[in-house]
Length: 214
Picture (cartoon, rainbow, N blue to C red):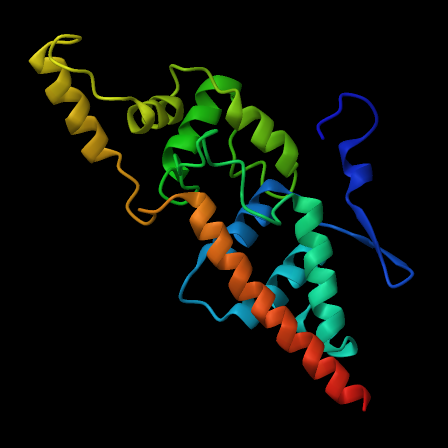
């Protein structure tokens, strides 16, 4: 939950196995995690381990101290903190339909932040908190490049009784131009499929952990 009192960074500490760990919640780091988790060609075990390393600023060698089942529990706790268990809600409409892609829309997002807030996102790497980034992104002005692109994707094509043929032709052209290239299915289905794959990895982690204990 976004609050306007206290420090937003104070929430970026997780308690695990009796120890406290600081999370790197800079927007560029979290977007890197989202990009990795969305990569259908990457190995799921690697996704889990690199996510832990990125969010806790660990090396892969640090994970050697933890058995597989503990790694899985840590990963799940990190996902809960990000609000990503059960799907990524930041990039979808209330219908659950994918309306944006951080990679495909990167240039428009960068330009829109600079236009609206005079923020250079490259200069903000490692500084701007992910929750602040999301709040600013969601409330960009409708005249920014990013909001216009999302508007074209979500806009319903009117009938010839509701608009001119030229406008309908223009709208269809814009929809083709800004169509999401990498994600043709809805985010809810993609997130469900991803969660099932990662849960299967988690089950393997737990079984390996039990096998090592015997």
